[in-house]
Image (tube, rainbow, N blue to C red):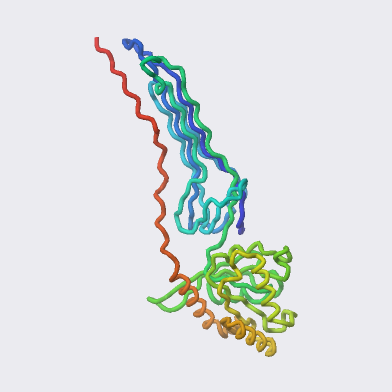
Length: 367
């Protein structure tokens, strides 16, 4: 089950209460205050994991809490801090604050980790309130509550190439020829109901190169207003470096003008925004095994006027597949050459340390 959006509620652990106690021990008159501090509440952390590729594990488990801190005890014993809760999310997940709409983080690198809710600080025991003029304090602090948040998680697949086009134009067949992906292929519209990913390898060892290609569910006119499957899946090609726009040049689709088909899909990309209409585009004439020469001629002339790279192929016969594969590989390589090196992942979160100095041990009286 592919789930690319989830809403969750998180609650960091509350801090433990500080203790009010006095040392009562034989032969130790006026032992003084001995209330320990409360432990700190655990944090809620999120970590990017390569083992997950969907948000389905949040769908039926939307609430997550961290352990609270233990209350302080007598004899200057501080309570233990609560354990942190770590939530694993797929690479490409964007975290938003549901209440304010602010983006908290965008996970783009493996093992990247952030704190999304901080645990409450533990309260101080009465040992911290003793002064020369107030030697038997009864003051102590309650633990502070941990942060609570409503979050919206949005998954944007990390693909290098995005396949676009009308339904039943041959995108699923093409991705099955370019990679080892096995999407559902059938002769009817909207066969693809969720994005499919495939890894394409170009060249031979030791100069082999690979990139990820994503097959988007088909767009139709009015998709930006909710027609068909709408544009809910277009977020998955926001990070791509190049788009391959497939246009049917056969008579199987029933549509007469391939140029108009291209312009309609381009208009939907512009309506969606997020820079999709600014990305490099390769025009691909699909279904060359059943080509209508007039449609092919018209689309070729249009691509030439727009100065767009043009390829003609048949996923059935294999015609033009290799040429498109190497062109996509070169476009991805050119894009990657300008990407900065990924920063190293941050160190794992450490347990809370008490900000208060350790209480001085009372000296035992000798007889």
